[in-house]
Image 1 (cartoon, helix red, strand yellow):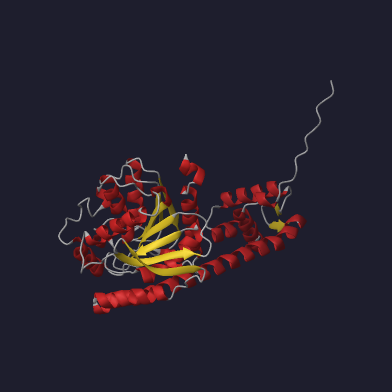
Image 2 (cartoon, rainbow, N blue to C red):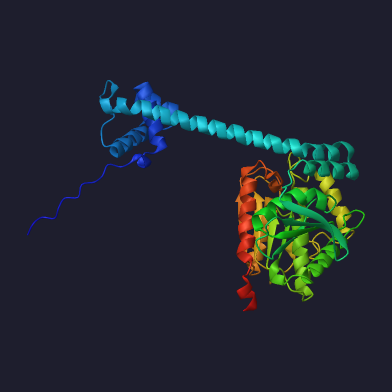
Length: 402
């Protein structure tokens, strides 16, 4: 019986080379001494020897002549050395450039947020903080492909945004953030325009009543009125509730009230950097840089909004409420956000209540990073993901008939 043919292995490609091994190789080549190279790399000499042997197995030849007295590069080692140095140098340059850009973007976000922080710290005047917040939002670009018109939605003033080419019949009800005391439909029009460019939907941004002039439940009553008004022209599966920060708290309270009153729920919810735990000021580090600027100011926001309602009352704190029956949710948060814990707690609570919920985390150091979509890659990516989520919830006309 003839012997089976021998199988000749192909030499491994460049993708089999570990960067750690390349750095080990260059260190030994520079020092021609394993002990000194190991010290430079903060590893033991035996570990360094194993890395070199692993690299030699991958490339298929010996890279160093070793003896008890000296270490020398082989011809193969000399052939690899220049290329290895070039690869590592290019990688280092790329990492430095990445860090520089990242630092530049962080600085740009801080520059935009600092006037709000300063207004709260220096004046403690809510009117000054509101004005600074609106000035910040006015700096964000508004797409020329979106029509913005005033609307009275169930008696609540606001704005309706319509993209040039809406892809479907879905409409977003967007509830803006601002700690229940800041924010406006006008200020949020740039962010919501960017969002509906991804969702292919129209949107309504209500100017719900703010504290301290109008404490709880004024904002929630307004949100319910707007939603009921939308139901006069849309089926429930054509509606999506979207919100950021404190608006996300309001969005959850809205859906809980709709459920409890037997009003049809929207098809989905998109919650951007939700602020849900109203005890947040007690766990907020004094150095935190977020869109909710300083601990003392936030405490005032909460007190003026609650109007005497206990802070853990399910009517104002959705983390203490039963979330059973709520629609699918997409929750997005920043890993460096002081309020990241709120997104995690919501995800856990919703899962316990049987809600279909997805949490997405983005490596950004600030709250409601979505504001900065025009220059922050993570924000643009997050909006695209939110758009895909909303589009996935939209039913075809045939499905609605069925």
